[in-house]
Amino acid sequence: MELLPEELFYKEIDAKDFIRDYLRDSSVSISGGKDSLVAMDLSMRAGIKKFIFGNTTLTYPGTLEYLDKLEKNYDIKIDRATPERPFMDLVKDIGYPSRRLRWCCEVYKFGPLTHYVLENKIKYLITGIRAEESVRRKKYEKISKNPLIPAVQINPILEWTEADIWNYIKHYELPYHPLYDIGYTRLGCWLCPFQNKDDFKRLKDKFPNLYETLITSLTENVKKFGKVGVRELNDYVNNFGWLTNALPIRNIKKGNVEFSKNHKETKYKITCFNKKVFLKILSNIELLKKNSNSVTIDIENYEINLKSSSLNINKVLIFAEKQANCVGCGACKSLCPKSAIKIRYNQIRIDFSKCSYCLNCLKTDKLRAGCISRNYAPIRSKFAVRDIDGEHASFEKNLLESDGLIKTRIKLHEVKAKLSNFFINTLKEQPRYSEINNIYTFSTNNLFITIRKKQGFTYVDLKCDDAEKNLNLLINVLKK
Image 1 (tube, rainbow, N blue to C red):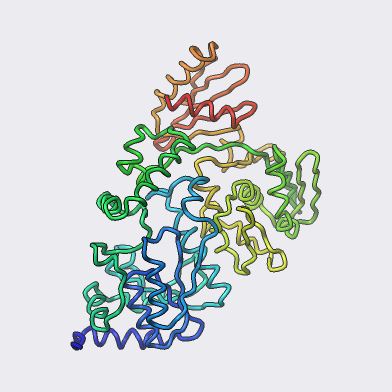
Image 2 (cartoon, rainbow, N blue to C red):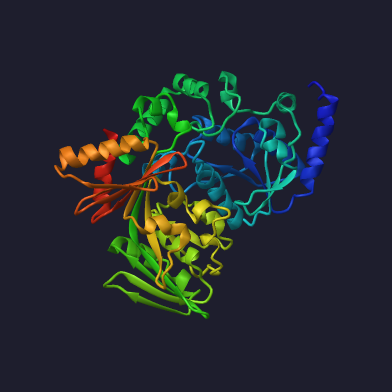
């Protein structure tokens, strides 16, 4: 066996000494890649006994078998952290992530890992992160903190080069992943949106079944959520437009949240438009009850009335929309310090025997909007907010005036032309038309549509009966 290069010899000693400072309550995070392999080997030599693999359900073929091989070769047990729903199942509800809509890490990495950390009382996670890998990782320190994971991150090989990694692997004859022998340089999720076109061409060549699964799923996604904003299906799917784009947003109003303040407390009334949403909110209403002075529930009218001196309107709104939008992704489990959030039948359920009623699950600083689906899904359930003393809540001002919303990249003048043609030639109606301050309206006896431009998007606001049906109708109009 050849000697290690002198510099690497001392790096190995330093890394093991560094790891030994964190022997208690530690676990090594394993991805299946070369860097985490080296971190695992160093940690074992230093005395670490726990290992965790986050199964994103998007691992390359052979990865799970490779982990079995590591367990056998090293005589260890590698725990598996699994998400609530497989990726290919979840995207049917909230669409695909992209470089602009990067929700996948919260659901498939941080959420399951947080659950493992809390359940196993892990204080330190040892990683194979290296500064050389990316500009972002150059800013990391050897001891760091991820706000979505309640454990200190220990990065013992942060300053190692790729040459150091391979020299260490060859010197100790470590069993590395076989994909490195067929040209792969990094292993992660096989459809990560931060890959380039060449990566997907290689996927098509090496794993045609996976590539076909991706293309089929993307096509079904566009058909389900509408082609509004997708100018050319082939460009979006086969030419990887989905990597940087996002499907259009449709907001559908599912109820109202009214509030009234006095000097001691605030009164809230949550009204749902249908029984399904009402029952979703009731399932976890105990969270608000414990933070309220009084609660009354009107089952016949789907209403919940609260009086509270501690809740604010934002928390009540997030609570209502979180329940209404939940698809059981499990990302918000990472927000709960007591592991009280569970997923049952693709719906959030709070274990109130564990809950401390801290309302961390309604915060937005770690998880945008407090909910992946509420923030990223192409079709979102919304509650209008109204101050019954007179003023609308500013952050929901526009939503209050509409029952549904479409957000699209189609040019405003094209939207106007399509709608005008639809009213005149399809509905055989002459709509009332007006324009005030660059806000355009079309209206009939049954429909009131507002069109406006904002931050590069065209917003189509709809006020009518049966908003969901009419939104789908508008989607079909704009597709043409």
